[in-house]
Length: 291
Image (cartoon, rainbow, N blue to C red):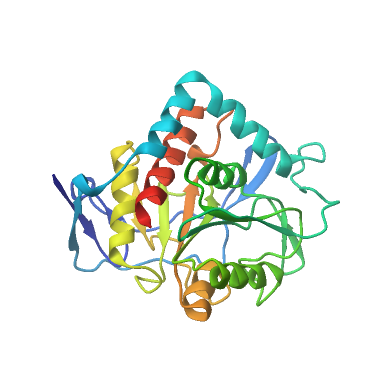
């Protein structure tokens, strides 16, 4: 079976869903008592361009890991695991300062395969001298992708410099070491978008520069198959700034990367665990087929 999708420089979605451009203003929302504000440094407004079609060879895909996610969701184990994982970031009375007694601001869990999952905004962080809120549940989602796929994972441990904004820094140093030592071929950089955003997930690729069209196609297919339809490429957050993890990975480490901005609706499991599950299963399916 072949599935056909549409890609434009401004957005990426299933053909039937159409493509709507434009963004809403940044806003602050409250989830689990934590303020979360969409990042500003990559915000863009795109012009429409001619679409390009793609195909997915469904018979070549595997879903073993995704089926394990589904089983854990149905038996209740997933809900227990995700809250347990998120506690390491929400500690300090739910303030999302992270583990302030840790030796390093970032942590790496070795896995296998060519994919590295990155989560630099798991806790509050400092950008331009100001504290920015955590992009909550990106940490638990990264750790769960590792659990189900054995992908490598790099994540922020406690409040400190914003790895997605600062030039250089220890997070990027560790990223470079991992990419070289483990022959990483693709970095998925997880982020959280606010409630005002008019997408389910925005894939930042610096307008198609940082990753192949086939990877974008596969990820979009995985999301659409699980009822996540408002999937765009470079709709609002293009990862065009050189200090973003995605841009840095491509230009400095010569490795493919995607910045994934996940809407808050899919990161609010205390109110809607099913949406969190569908996003997680989509990412797991993608990772197990992206290598």
